[in-house]
Amino acid sequence: MESYTVQPVKGVRGEIAVPGDKSISHRSIMLGSIARGTTTVKGFLRGEDNMATLNAFRAMGVVIEDDGETLAIRGKGLHGLTEPGDVLDCGNSGTSMRLMTGLLAGQRFFSVLTGDQYLRRRPMKRVVGPLALMGAAILGRDGGEKAPLAIAGRPLTGIDYRSPVASAQVKSALLLAGLYAQGPTVVREPHVSRDHSERMLRHFGADLEVADDGVTIRGGRELDGREIVVPGDISSAAFFLVAGLIVPGSELLIRGVGINPTRTGIIDILTLMGGDLELQNHREVSGEPVADLLVRSSRLKGIEIGGDLIPRAIDEFPVIAVAAALAEGRTVIRDAGELRVKETDRIAAMAQSLRLAGASVEETEDGMVVDGKETLAGCAADSHGDHRIAMAMLIAGLAATGATTVNDTACIATSFPTFMRLLEQVAVR
Image (cartoon, rainbow, N blue to C red; front, side, top):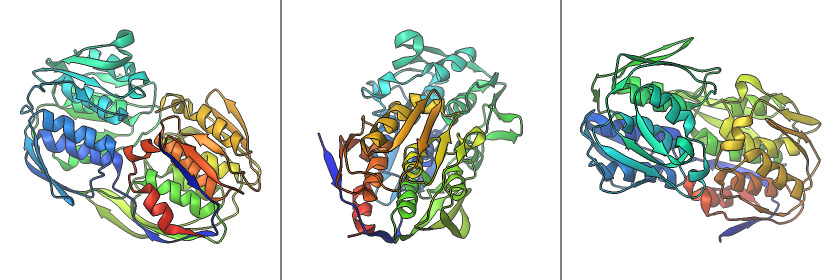
């Protein structure tokens, strides 16, 4: 089992660029594969999760060329995928499994999706249920709640679905299924979730409308290949934003980060906590807003975090909890029950890990209460197989009073394979 140890540092300084956005990278493979013509993708994240998606579409007959810098996806058109000769392995990627379940539901062939031990424990009924209302035939363990999922592709009918959770994965699965459905498919959410699918579907020419009360897609229209440039992943940048805030003597510039407004909850939260964050050089790339982020060490204060901030920062809460542990006063995180069904129960895992570092953390059903301290202590923590828990605790270790070791760090490669190298690059010892 891999482990990694960090020592406290004197600052975090310099300029870096984080890898391409994981969510956008997944979608570029999926839509490029079912579009007509060639799609080129620059900045693709070659993490394990995204490679699982790429390999799945290769297994369905799509030619994807990779010269190390640019992907060239030779699209097969809306109905050009072929039945895979084996089970499709999604690894640890919930995005791969949930979005492909929607896309495969409307194909003319049979397929099976599986994943690693962690993914096979995650809930899938939130996607399988509404897809069944569209006419999909999907079987899985525990009544369709758990993978492996067996999908017998068949004709689908559009539905008007009100999702009980704000989830980009649920919304995206239904929109992808809607490409193959007869009639409109409408998805409504309690709060707006990230909209990368909507932006990219429009970029590829889908018949899609976004309104205040939901997203509507009409099936049957062919997509056309496009050029895509993937911006830096704000979820990866978040770890270095927090590092720059909590380690005294820090000033760090992170170049080319996607600042999609459905994803910038982390920036809003850290700014509300008193963080010195500056967005520079605003521009748009392939339909996505991008900026350079400058962060300086700051004295943070505790705040209350809930409501519509939650879906806009759902993946960043492990490292937000680290910032809260070193903020002045109390931070209350609520409305975040979705964290309990991520790669691990992130509420329980972060509460346990931060307590090991001497923090005062109380779990609640849908979040946590953190009473900030001046310093954390070095400790030995476990990732629980979750890449974001592993990276969050390594960032905490930069501001601790002794060595911090995180066990089972191989999972970091699922989303951020260059994390350790960048950490060494900016650490001032």
